[in-house]
Length: 301
Image: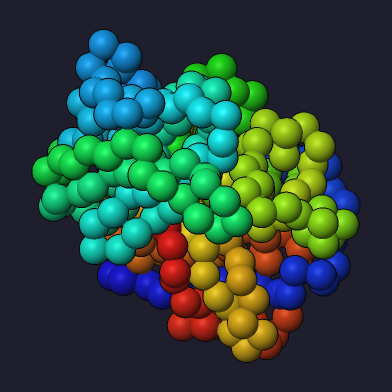
């Protein structure tokens, strides 16, 4: 049976949650049920020995079948990185040689990877370029690993917490429910931060966890980090939410199961399901209750 995901949403500047608790599972489990088996941790690393130099940039395309490319570059100028296929995804790139991982979210096909160096005003010049033909091991590869917008490691505190939830879970949906419940109960919307956010901002999921507050980007990055680390494919999506045309970030999860996550949520069997923790954690407005048709996806990571 396929059930539509019902999402309870509200405007970002609405009410806030004050609870600071770790929710208990919503249902009892029979002792004879098998525990959730977490898949092997999916790495995303820069393989220096495999990297190919072009100009002052190093491109590691050795793991493109696993859904990512890793790049390193050095310059005294601002750098940008582009992932080019059917569309172009632009990113800020660190200029001190620190390797960064970027997702290949456009599926199989021919990609061009390009590093740009700032010249003057809004002008950039190509520093280095490489291309690659990509055949993903499966469509979920970009969404089970860390990347520049979903930064975590095995040692991240948010991953340790997610692992605790998994150890008590009987299914992937149990893990989703526990992560969802925790974020809703413990993370509040940071309106001052939203009003003063700078271009190029990158979330730190552990900081969001530690401070207990963040903007929509922080909510989505924390949620994606926790679920991906437990083998649950999760997208971080940017787009617009009507009727106010808010530019917003949210998540979509994939599960082969079907059933309730919380009282307000159902999920599609064998399908991507929209999960908006920012709105859900901060209340609900009947204007924003819907089936997801008021969301317009623009970018996914």
